[in-house]
Amino acid sequence: MTLIADNLRCIRQDRVIFKGLGFTLGPGQGIWVKGKNGAGKSSLLRMIAGLLKPSKGTITWKDVDTQEEPESFRQDFRYIAHQDALKPVLSVRENIEFWAQYHGGDKVAGALKLFELEHLQDTPAQILSAGQKKRTNLARLVASPAPLWILDEPLSSLDTHYIDLFTDLLREHLEGGGLALLATHQTIDLQRVTIFDLDNLKGVV
Image 1 (spheres, rainbow, N blue to C red):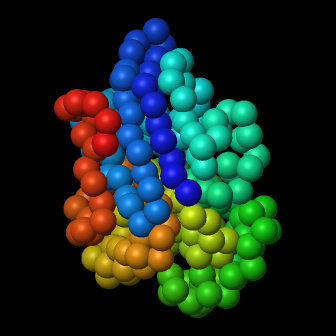
Image 2: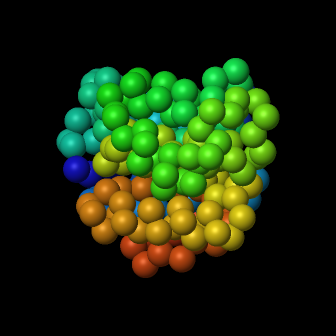
Image 3: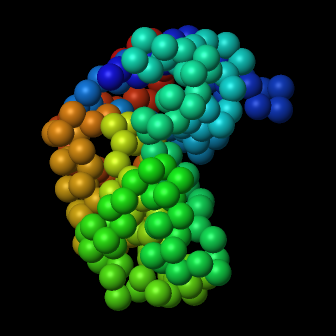
C-alpha cells in the first residue's frame, strides 16, 4: 500500500496555489503538511481525498490512478475535515454509527470508549462543545478502520489530554503499518512523521 502524488498543481479562482508537488507515502509513514494560511494545505488534503481535482498531475494508490478507480480508493481511507461532519439532531452514538455503517465498520462501542464519549453517547451533536465535536469526528477512525488517514487539523479544539490520546492512537496506527497525511498548526511528536512544507517546495518527499 503506497500513496504517490506526482507533479500536482492546484488552481483556485484562477490563482496557482501550488504546482510541481509530489511525495511518496508508504506503510508505517506519516506526512505532516505545513505552510502559511493560504498555502494550500486543505486543498492538498481534499485533492488526495478526491474532493478536488488537480489541474495537473496524478495520485496513485496501490499503483492505480485514484481517478480511475475512486470507489476502491475511497474504501481504503478516512478523511476528517477541519469542519465537523456531524448531523446536529443525531446523538453522538448515532453520528458515529452513521459513518461506521457508511464505511462498513462495526467498532462503535470501542470508539466511544477510546475517545471517552460514553457518558455523552445520547447527547445531540448540536449541544456539544467544540472539543466534544472534534472527538466525535475523530472516533470515526476507530469505528471504521482504514489503512490511510487524511486529517485536516485533527488537534484543533482539543485540550492536552485528548491531544496526547490522539497522538498515541496515531502512533499505534503508524506502528501497525498504517499511513497518515495530516495538516495541523499544533505540534505533534512522532518519529515516523516527515514534514512537508508548502512554503518551501523543493521536489519530492
